Image (cartoon, rainbow, N blue to C red; front, side, top):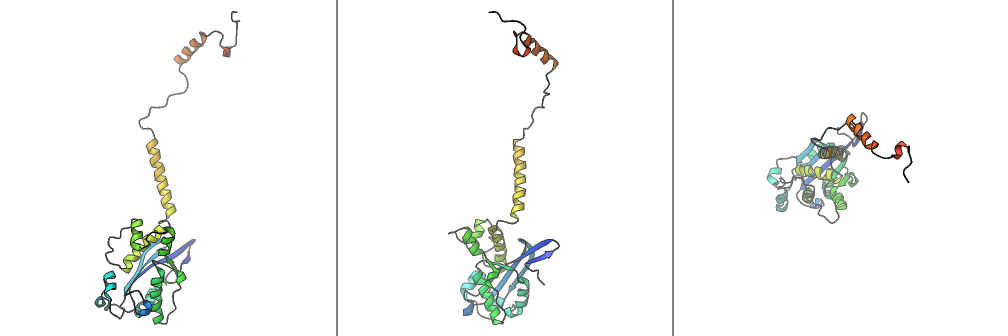
Length: 247
């Protein structure tokens, strides 16, 4: 049984999200294109738990050359894997009722719902999905919103993405998503950085090899010199006047 999106664990509320990506035979789920891979990453309170779901799927059809060039999954390779009907229960159990974070949600949810419709299963409501393409376009109007472009923007290493793969893309999307919402544990990170900056600034401005502070009270010699100077003054006003000045 998977965790619900918000569940009570002692006094802590846990928020579970699923980063999801699919690979397919093409772009049209209603025209015969099928899912060939699903990859999911579990986040709890915006932290990856290490709990993942990945499954290659036999589409029961040929693999178009254009799709093969994208993900490299051949008809021969996929023929040795289960069909969607065989993995549907495990997949649905993994995602539960939790929020799905998807890059171009209409595409992936459309394919998943087409597969579910073939099995007479209920569709997944699109309102369950957070679309990171829409998030990126809102945050960076006019900028490219592809996964590769966002990896470049956030300096996320995607050098291993020579071919698309559902689990690899879900892992990259998890990092992009956390950046789009402000970074992983932004308050904690800011607090630690602020402490470090304050400490560094204090160390840079603190005097090094400074002299020892001197006592503030005057010495006996200094007091005697001061008294001699005062005695040389004629009728200083702070001692009061004892004789009239000559006219």
